[in-house]
Amino acid sequence: MNNQGAPLSVINVLCGKNHDLQALRKSGVLYRRAARLLKKSETPESVVMVVSTFEGPVNVSATSSLEQSMLPAMDLTHDEEPTEDLDALFLDTQAHEMTLESNDEESDVEEYMQEDEHEDTVLGDDEQTSEEHGEHAPDYTKMADADCIRHWALAGNESLASVGRLLEMLRAKTDLNIPKDPRTVLRTKRDRATLLNIGDGQFWYHGISRCLVLELRKHATVPQVLLFDLNIDGLPLHSRSKTQFWPILMKVVEHPHWPVLVVGIYCGQSKPESNGPFLRPLVEEINALHRTGLVLEYATVRVHLRAIIADTPARAFIKGVQGHMGKHSCLKCCCEGETVEQRTVFLDTNANKRTDGAFRNKEYVLHQTGSTPLVDLENFDIIEDIVVGDRLHQIDIGVTKKLLNIWYIGVLRSTKRWNREQREIIHHRLKRQTFPFETQRKLRSLDDLSYWKGAECKAFLHYAAPVVLKGLLTGQQ
Ligand SMILES: [Zn+2]
Image (tube, rainbow, N blue to C red):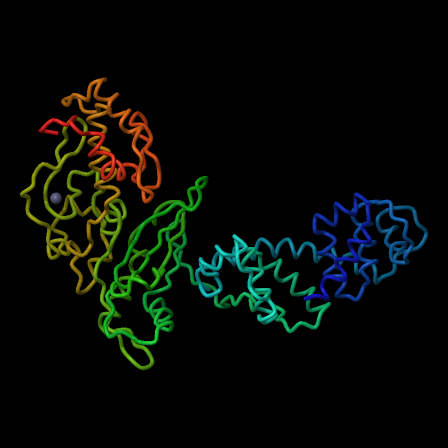
């Protein structure tokens, strides 16, 4: 890798104190063109001349034959005609620049598509963190040439095009044993992921078997039975765009230390248009796995889905039932909601429980507003096995925040809120509270209750409430 330094430092020296050339050097234009031109066995000196004449007249006192012949091409007064070779070089260099630019865009998309495909090329968390803190840089002397470049590319999140340019230059100027194609260095899989269009979005289905086979390779023993949970949820990708991911994630129950496996991802501007194409491949695969097991080279593993875990809106989506605001939205029983003070409440605690059989027969006409491929899942109880374990929406933002809204803000007409004196006491007590380190934030004032996050409600319930509310709650409350 040392040879690479030579032409670059020559470029540095040649640019000297000339501001225009220095600006070009800093913009990277010189190096990029140098990479190409050096391959054509031009000298670094001629590279600087070629580039400087391209970018406009700069005051360099050099009279190489190359520069002289390039000047007329730039519409400057000169007598000699450009030779054919140099004309070609000029066009070639320009064409090369344009390919570089278009490559940049393409490779970004490609990388994005393939990111999940080549998990093995992504650095582990630990490695990345220690890199950031500069604690222990890898020992390049012990690494293969290509691995050094791969490490550099991954650590700096370099584009395929940059890696390609570096490889091209190194291959031309050094005798390092490195591949031509950046994808070989990065160990990118060549077969593009198959994407399925669902509405305006795209769906990539990786598959349970493929996830498990890849994971099982890392372990010495193969278990006889594998029980797994699935999680389905939507998450925004950026704060400033509507693009969101709907991943299907999988966790093997008996092996909590195994990583969460990505079975599939939908990406689009909103949630998938329909749950049909989103869940169909999953349902088919689970059924097939259940019948035949996961067939490996030396063993067959029985694979069984234990539960599907999703938050309230996602549950309604995958089951094709009424959203949680609806009067027939309860997933577990047939209770009917009533409207009290513009809110839907469920007062019936003795309603009949919903059953798997009745659900599959589409008997809950008001509850089942759509269809779902999940009814085709074998050996799965669609009521019991889609669990309602959603602390954030039910306890933190649900009960805790709602009660504080009633007591402190006074959102219910029928219930009087705390009086000014009580609210002052709570305000002062809350201000003086210190929280253990495991709670992330200091609580904001209750006057900002509408901005409280789930974590704040949780911290209030477990740590602040017993102290802050002492002596203030009535028996009924
Ligand atoms: Zn219910």
